[in-house]
Length: 386
Image (cartoon, rainbow, N blue to C red):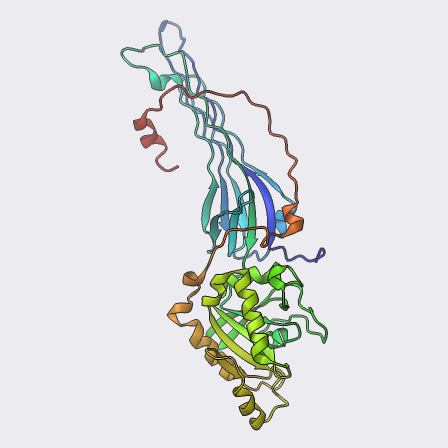
């Protein structure tokens, strides 16, 4: 997996810009011996902003850019000159990216739409210059405010593919073959386990101009929720799917037992996955006759709709599309309603990313005291958009 370009989990350090200090200055000019205070305000520090980009499908560009810092605001000057605002840093992420606090694992936000912007860290406000504090009783204020400090946070970005249908099954269950048969996707297909090492997406056409998205993830084995095999690394992508298509080959020893094992692994990973719509597909049925199919129906799991298919001959694929389309359009299986966000714990972290140590020294700064009251009417007029 080290050489794969599909990166769906990355840990980065972000820091917003600090606000510039306000200026304490008095106007001096010929024939104006007592011009009064005219110190300008400091500039706002830069924000850290997340922006969705539908042209991205991986977090590879952030794997080698672990430190993202916005610039600081500039201090104010004389003649009521405002300091320059710090430059914002915009982080482009694929749609379907969830953000977590790296220290506590708490869910922070998500980016699901193209062009959607979320202010992850707010830049510090600039300090007020001394001209803001002049009054009839305080005509020569000899103080100004410092800028607000920067905010530094280590965050985890986790990509969850947006798809309507997610394929769930053991290795060699025929998931990649099905995806290649009903869509234009070309996943790797071979006769050995774990052929699929990264998720694949395919657009499935349905009755003319209609279509839905299908996602193929690596095969799940018993104990995947505990870190065995490749399942734990990619089970997060199932959380975004509206419908789960369980795939079990017809030559399995016990179809009901294998279905229960797959369902248990999903529930162990995230209990909310049990509430998603489910469809069962019995694959590799091209060698079965009608009598064997009727006999197998008596030993199928209860409470789940079952379709017998063959991706090689095309048997049952039209019926499978009809069943999936009806399940996807069920009001209870809409993607926005079924998205779940559980906080990260030790089980759901990627070890090699979580062990990443950030060695970045912050510049030494003197502590600044905030002993000056901020006028409410000033902030309402100048900072209402922040």
